Length: 328
Image 1 (spheres, rainbow, N blue to C red):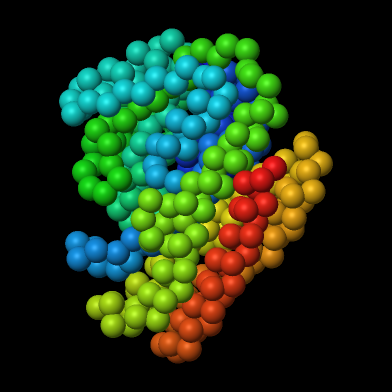
Image 2: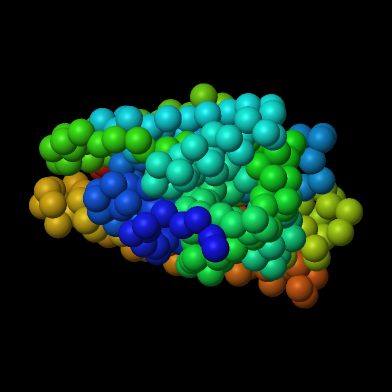
């Protein structure tokens, strides 16, 4: 018989880290929407990452792994306990001790090893929650795209937890062990809005934030000479931007919906303007990924020029939107 946490119910989400936090919070009686979690976590970002050590540039649309969870916990005054260890045995002891006490556990994983993942790509910053186990399987809560409540072999989960490589951690697990009275949400939301906007508009290096989008708009024209397998690289990049747990439009759908909740809460005219801009920005990101995908499938490099032009417009609109947010 599997040992399952009594009363555990699935939090349905699209992005792995917000979904994991949503599951942990919901089990403690804290219910916030996924866009609200993404916004409170100051999740919106951008990075254009390229180096000699990688086969093709990486495009990211959010803050660094682990920062989102940490920021959510900080804004909500939550007690979040993070454990890491190089010992596989100790890592499982950490998890089992929580499951025995009825506490679901967030895990950071390389999704390549999970039985229920059909796209076998090494990505060591995937998050899911374990809420039970038996002698062979772990019972997991993951994103809606990955099936929600799923199982994976304990042996494969061990490899997923202990994987090495970019963005990996040493068998990282995290729990919310108690929640005191939540602080008033309005001030927490306002602080998150302003801080996220400031970080986005003032990145530490030029390939991040708003400057990073401008950089991508020029670098994308050089991609044909950067790739050894252009069709594969372009189609994979488009897939990761649109469907790899981003909520679509490289996380801009999530942030748009967060801004809508903020408009309903605050009734602020500047937030309304920012929200209006993001209703335009999100489909423009859809257009960028579609052009990249088309370029890969057809070999028509004019599609990359179209994507470049869209990125120039996106950078300007996102700058305006975040400047509105910064001054609320």
